[in-house]
Length: 284
Image (cartoon, rainbow, N blue to C red; front, side):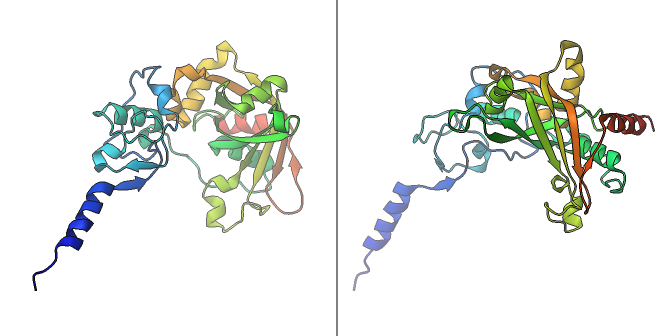
């Protein structure tokens, strides 16, 4: 009997028509060190477009050398990135060399009895926090609204206790602050390794949490240089974000410092005590 090649031919045709597809986000946030492009000028017209998730989840699969770059495309289109320009722009917007970020000089928190030191430690070594505002959004107007922000109180070798933000008017939180500038910023020691090493749940009182409440204000011109150093030294990628989004610096002027770092209650720390601890730490 002569063998039949029809099933084999049909399978080959199906593979050819389907090609290959992968499920991935439209912008790669993981870039190998060989693909990272050093700082350079970014086109204001091209760069903002890369921040928009302009395609669906399904994209045609390409060799690994092209996966890092995504061309700007309309939803549903399967367009291969043209050249290396898309990969380079994506790398410059969303990645940076790890050696640009100074490592923490101390990973051990202070004793829980030293509440001012603990508050200073958490506020300084936290790279991000949860900012709560009173919403201006139509559906939840007047209700609490929380958002995550990257923050810094200074370079790792210079703790100031002043929390700096790099924000855009396009953010709902910034719109809230224009209506009511008062906000609360919460940090958790669970961000670092200590609570995981001690097997503390994030809600365990021994896994310290700090809430700073105050007034959010725009950084004055004479303070801008330090605000830039504080934020960009801890978050280098921010320096490359598109200027078309009108980014600007804000800071939190403290009214209350609330800390829970052990069982048995919480602590309200006087601002003057925190400042004294900061001065002592930076001069010792």
